[in-house]
Length: 309
Image (cartoon, helix red, strand yellow):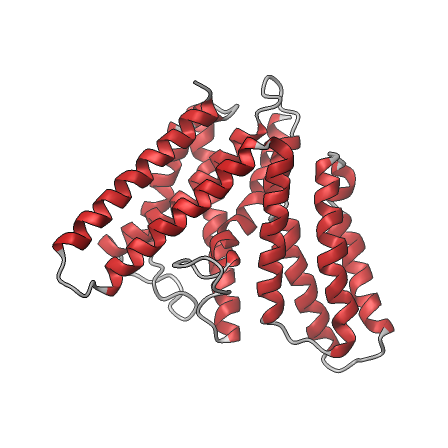
């Protein structure tokens, strides 16, 4: 049995167990169900859908994964754009973000042109986008509008694109197994989110940043990071790392994932919204699920690239 099959069978067992527990709790609880149980059922259903989407993408290999994350970037950027201040003069810049920048960035990853996909957005797009906006001649809130556009393309496209870019890493004795590295990153980072929530509910007393994210506590963070690092160490067989290295990298990725989620929460607070969108029932928008990968993916990618290739 391949490592990929073992991984997804394990995830199916976990989700099946979670579904059974939720069904039992719902059966035993008085009706109508509490908001907590309703939320639990909806979230488990959403996780089934997301795992199914990732599984299908994995079946199609590199092309399927690149298309999946290109779609994630498109959906996340669309959600981000709806929260920004735009004017009529911005339409060409916004259009180019969707029909030029996203396809080009992911095509460069497809052909494994690291020298260009690593600088295409932070250098060339960084310069081209404000120039295109300036050519339209509308200077009202120019700096604010341009900054929001550049932040959006960095968060939604550049950072997220480092997830499929993991498949291009030429790690000795690990060729053609980049999908497993992606699975390792997603499982540990997303698992950390769940574990932080659980530890926070059980032991949380000291809030980290009440004005940004009132539910995040130091107890939840520490417990979630340590347990996710242990999970990463247990999944070392998916990676080219030793158990200690896998645990350390999982811990680093989860710390960055926490910071990404905190920044995303700050943006939502600034815009006065609870969720980025409503695409995923029980989870909000696409960015609500991808925010932890935004900071984790590029850091994880470059650490592995410079230390293991």
